[in-house]
Length: 319
Ligand SMILES: Cc1cc2nc3c(=O)[nH]c(=O)nc-3n(C[C@H](O)[C@H](O)[C@H](O)COP(=O)(O)OP(=O)(O)OC[C@H]3O[C@@H](n4cnc5c(N)ncnc54)[C@H](O)[C@@H]3O)c2cc1C
Image (cartoon, rainbow, N blue to C red; front, side):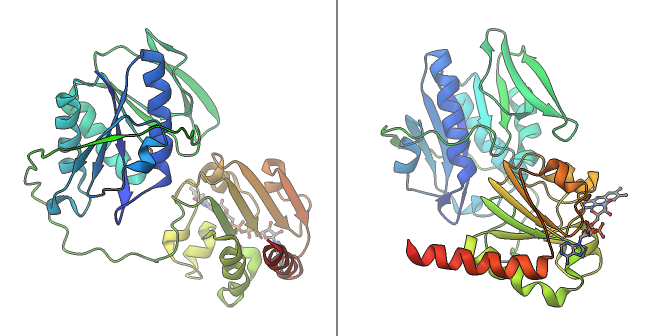
């Protein structure tokens, strides 16, 4: 009856969201007086999971699962949940988990709460707090089904480290034929993706043209950040669509979001509301983004950004 958590990995390495959902699962398990079992697919380094609250890892090793397929993965997780008689199943809010969660909920006949931002306020009835209307409101939701499926909002709960040890157990579920075979995956970039990034450096039409993105990439490099942009920037072809952030683009839940030459239209803000600290650099002191910012610099990006890069480089050199 342990709490089951799906810990996502990429190229054998657990994603940050995996450690966050493991931490969340531990909080739920503590409330229920039970343990945490993680499902890890095609990765072996389980020690890091033990350090984030996991007691047991079901290691699935199967080349048919090398590329993500929502139906197949949901089926694997369903089998794991049934094997563990799990009553609470936790997943992240990654793009992959958003595809698989509804299928898993149907498979387990589970009530499903998405966008959950806090540990349950009660486990009987099972009550969680969720964001609604692109993070503009909260909803308090109870799940009344026997099995409960919870998707934790990225960056909402944080990582909680412990000194635990996770035992590892091989798990060989039957892997159904999905009917869809991914032949190859061409990633848009080998750099850190917007969804997984702790820091995002984003720029808008204030940059005037694609030829000026060198300083944005340099700032991102210094900070170990992902680069992003506003919608018009990707519409104009200045940057790839994979970088477009907002209501019609990707959501960003970074620890630090730096917006340079972006006005802060409501459709852009809808995508970055879940980010923790927002820094805005804009020439116009009346730009709406300043109302959403934690720190703001009223200034010309072409003057501010090179100075910021210089200062950060000097700071890093001293470390
Ligand atoms: C249905 C719908 C969906 C949409 N979805 C999205 C979405 O998902 N994401 C999104 O981003 N937009 C979206 N939009 C578009 C949105 O409404 C805005 O038009 C867009 O976000 C503006 O982009 P921007 O801030 O880069 O450009 P602008 O609005 O042109 O703003 C540029 C900013 O740069 C500043 N600036 C100019 N020069 C400098 C300088 N040298 N240094 C510093 N600052 C400078 C200006 O003061 C200004 O604030 C959507 C619109 C609609 C209608």
